[in-house]
Length: 423
Image (tube, rainbow, N blue to C red; front, side, top):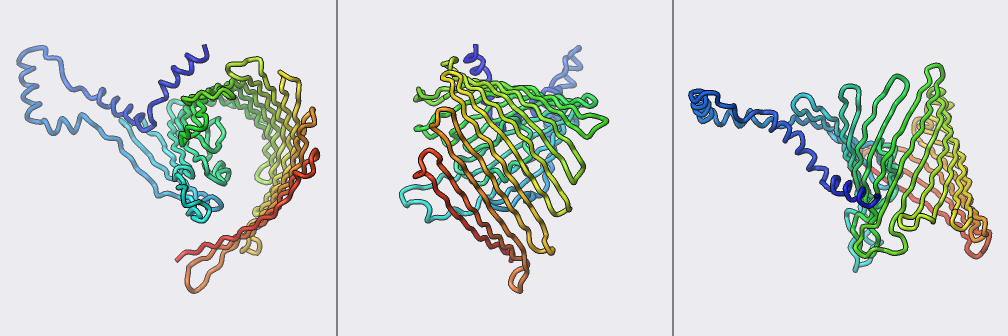
């Protein structure tokens, strides 16, 4: 039953996003009448004569082109990985369909030619990031459609996540292309949302790699208490993925996954908020259902703002994976701390980040620890030759400790300096 269901959805969503713009045009064409039924021969003759005399006017009135208005693109992020531009477009179809369209596109930094050999030419699409989101509100409902493309070799795309404000339930990740539709409705303090998504991996169609087709659908509910600044959310989703490559890889052909998520968030104003979350998922391979895996993930995070320009974000999490078909477990605790101090002496921005994580399983084949820290400074200045110069300096330290084989342990130090100026 799963495979025919996937094929039906695959055919339905195989249409390119731009073809969907034909729908309101076709509705408009059907709305405007072309012919009138001739009750009498005289009326039919008069109608034919009027059509010949006003042919040009009739053609113009029959097809009402949509009104489109676009704003100038804004730079919503400019840092490692390149700038992220946001464009906002407003459309008007038949004075009833007025979607808001947000377009996000990245402007990658120029690649370093020395990092590629002369025999290889990088694919420009590898570094492309693009989101086109269409939203419409109608009679208390909010529904929309989102197209997403994330290149295979796009670096630092995590910086784009918050700025893009994606509303889909499929996480952003490299090597991803697809669409999602959703609808949501608020009933007093309760918000309901349903969605369906179709995403493909291996966007460059590399024949040596599998091309996974993933369908995901589910329901989400949010409840905001009236007497307390607390938000509770719960969601359930089901995901089915299948390898669509012609080679048909035998090692991994697909899986089915069911996930339950719950979270509780407390809003203490702009100065403090805290979120506790938990999730459970059960997955198995599509053609070998006995190979089941359970995963649990629990976390707590907070955002503390003792001053308007200072933000402290501590996070604790714990993950556990249970491989039910052979009785093994893997545990993954982690802790992180982020400090952002902006406009120190109205000049310098300071960022401090640190993360510690551990991975360990019950059969002692995996036992390691990782420590990742970084410090960043950025500031701007003016001189006689340019209006503004921006400087940024980043230092990072990474340590990997293998408790089973000490020979695999290592540590590394990295640094980078960036200079930007406006003429």
